[in-house]
Every structure is written in C-alpha cells, then in structure tokens.
Length: 90
Image (cartoon, rainbow, N blue to C red):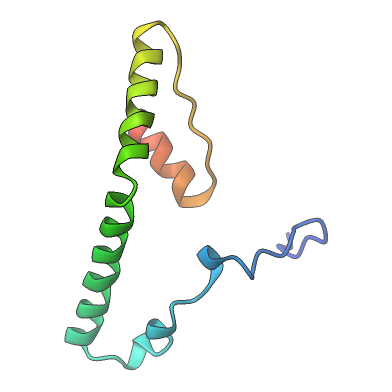
C-alpha cells in the first residue's frame, strides 16, 4: 500500500503542518533544554486556548443547550484528533 496519493492536497504550507524550528535538532538537545522547549510549547498552547475563552464558553453553552433538548454532539476528526474524540465520547 502506498501513501503517495495524487488526489491528496498538498498541505505542507499550513502552519499546523510545519516543523517547529526549535525542535529541528531535538536529538542533539540536552534533556533540560528539551524539557524547557516542551514546557514552553505547552504554555503557548494553553495561552492560545485561553485567548479564545469567550468563543469556547459560547460553544459549550450551545452544545449544553442542544444536549439538554435532545440534540447530539458529533465528533469529526482524523489521526490524533479523531482518536481523542473517540476517547472523550467513550
């Protein structure tokens, strides 16, 4: 089976598909520096989510109201996001 599919769009230009420049030589990075890099990226992720607090709050309110009135929450994802959706739903 080949993963080279001509119908697969090139997504290499998307930010989410880029390598983190600071991690390019992770294998040669000291353990303390690697841990600092990981913690810095975790902090940045938390800050990014926190910056969207009003939108996140509203989304939770909408989903909650929908579930209370008999609606459903449908997960869509692939790869890690898909597996996390399945884990959350379970």
